[in-house]
Image 1 (cartoon, rainbow, N blue to C red):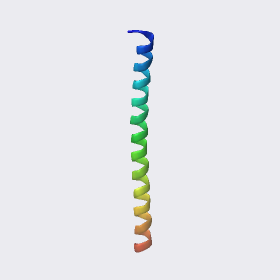
Image 2: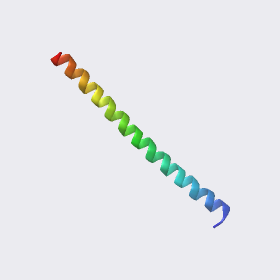
Image 3: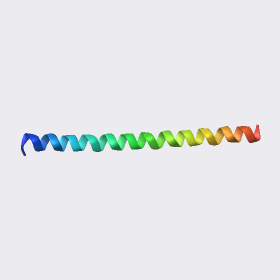
Image 4: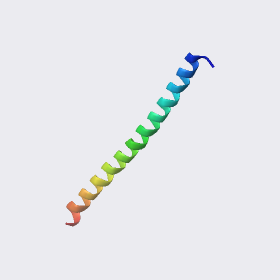
Length: 47
């Protein structure tokens, strides 16, 4: 494997990992926001 190929492979792997983490944290964030909105609505109606 040449140095350039190695560099490309590392770059691909790194971007895959970054995408994975960003999508996971984005999912978590959107879930959190949805729950937050849901609970504030519940408070308005029931409390």
